[in-house]
Length: 114
Length: 200
View (cartoon, rainbow over the protein chains, first blue to last red):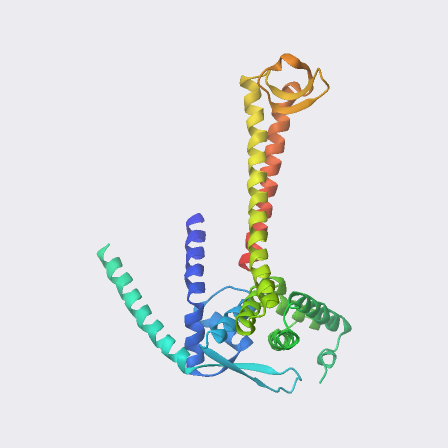
């Protein structure tokens, strides 16, 4: 049981560390609003985090110029903020993908050696 | 449409308002535009999440949605610090820089104090347990002592020559063990609750 807990904790940390990468990959496909994005991330990455934790991340990515946002009026009266990836974000994402492929390949090779 | 018109039950409006009072309190150091933007984004999230909830009463569905988005105290503070430092670097306003630094440092200090509290707590638990064991080997040097001068000491003393009386006797063994176990289990339990609430 303790081993299972340890593995689950490690897996959760790995997934959380990938959040920036996953957000950029989602936004590279289309525009998303906050709630929709966290739902998508939870489905893809099976990350168990408070939904609110996505906002500091989006805020940081926006500050770094990797994503941008726009407000859209909604019928409910509460406007909705949509996020989309920028050209800079696409470049960074492309670099991240390459780094990820290299990293996963080297881990695969290392595991085969064991 | 006003927020109050989105819900049919008064209690739901009350829960909504209470949550956004917390959001406002956490984000009050931001400038008004930033605060409004953040509030609107969280309102949209919470309302959307509430709509996706099924079954139960309206109030329970909102509470479930609140549970999923989490405590504003947890997720807004790093964002506030980040935004303050970001606007500080843009405007070079020393007041904003200080506010941002305060938030970052405050979070660090809070963490330090919590850690210190637990370190001290566990050390005290170990001390109580050790007193119980030491009493067996050094019965004259361990206990609750009253000195001839009127002063008193609890724990281990070097030379008991000036001691008028020792109050606890061998009772210090069960008392030490019970206090040690009580402290250990309550600290561990509270630490587990703290960790779980942070993880969620």
